[in-house]
Image 1 (cartoon, one colour):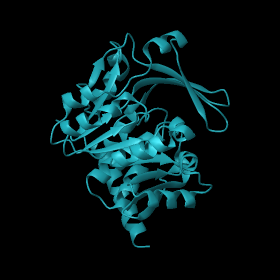
Image 2 (cartoon, one colour):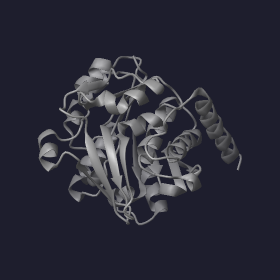
Image 3 (cartoon, helix red, strand yellow):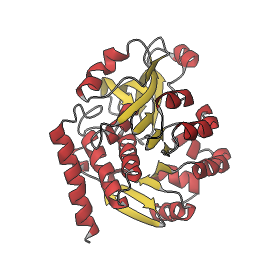
Length: 309
């Protein structure tokens, strides 16, 4: 039984950039969140839906990084494969490489309570979700908590939800029902009606729910217990591709929070994970013991330096 469950999407990505560059065949979705937790513990399980070709895309990566595929459920004809198109503004869109008819028929992989119940238990410490506020899985929140009575539940809010005024009350109610959430600066401004980073921080503090607040290349805040702790980004100058860094850092923040670490250490664990993730296209390929030891040591060094200021 894993201590950390990640209910995310199993996806393969092609990526098209505004300058015309295209890269193909990279792992995406929930694997980035797993890559936020994996540097700090292997005691995790990714829960998702895929097709019979899952091992063709993910098998080597899972084996190299000692990830179990017991949480991958074969429910689709093909593993989800999308084209991510980035705009110059930083916005992006996603579509199935198999065409709109396939996407309309099968949709995207989803989190389901039955997957968590099958792999849950009293030893589960944290559960991560990236599922919209209207996703059916939240109707089963009581079932999920019953199956994992000691787990803290975290959700990374979905951009479209935060930008929909009609969902604001529902989102606020939802945040009140979970233990920890994450969002980025544009999402916070849309949700809280703020016009600056400082105003968003104040709004999050007033709301009173622990939050990992991402502010792009600048860094991130861990906000809890009425205080906001800021940590600058890590090695942003070496970034090759930012895809998945939000998911990656959010996963790491769940780990740090659930382990009871100081908020500033949690933020640095998250930033280091994101910085390493951004070094190449796709998720970081292999977390060896040396890499994992270096990442934790670096996060702790940054934490102690910042704490002394």
